[in-house]
Image 1 (cartoon, rainbow, N blue to C red):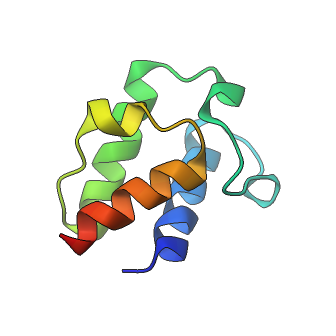
Image 2 (cartoon, rainbow, N blue to C red):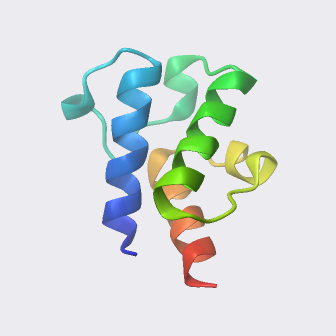
Image 3 (cartoon, one colour):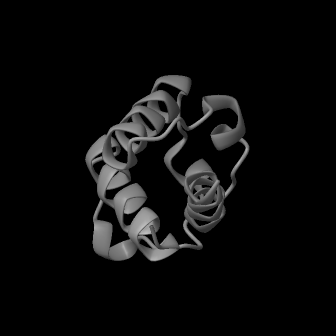
Amino acid sequence: IMREEVLAKIIEKASKIWNADAAEMNEDTEFAAFNPKSANYSQMTTFLEDEFDAEVPYLNFKRCKTFGEAADYVAELLDE
């Protein structure tokens, strides 16, 4: 699984969660820009787990500041 694929899924889900334009999101987009709640991170990790059939630890994912960092983190998990 490529990092770009993971990033695309993160953007896809983020645009739905926060009702924002996916075209304006990229790897430098910060989660903080959307004032995320814990439930949002939970929605995101559950979605990624379903998409990639892998466990994505919520607390570690939540530490990622940008979508790019999150994509790196998930891509690394999938490589294991």
